[in-house]
Image (cartoon, rainbow, N blue to C red; front, side, top):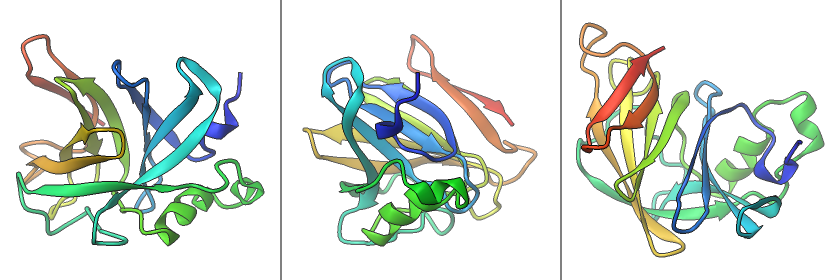
Length: 180
């Protein structure tokens, strides 16, 4: 069953916050990748709702791909995607991203894995970082519309971590990654 309200883009992974039922979505579209959240109109019913893209509060079009500080908490806001199922997506796979970016959304490098654990959403940027071989981010929701985004790991070389893809959180709180 298609759920066009959840966005027409290169979906990679989702994580659901069990408290709020907000669905977090990653986009694997090269340097035009966004991190989205979908808020269903009715709890547990995905057919209707609103799609939003993560933005860094006070820093429109923030570029997460390089030059990041490990552990720095970036204040987050969410920008609306007015047309989550645009006709332009037929020929331009960045059509949804470009709507969010035009509203100030943040840019990531190939977002892939996404997992809820310990009250946070963990996401993986396969090609992010100064060496281009991977980053791990943590989004901590704060209330309904705010939160913080923190870089919790950036690979210094392919010998350490090369293109992380999937992620999960163990029952003891450790992060488990799989390379692409």
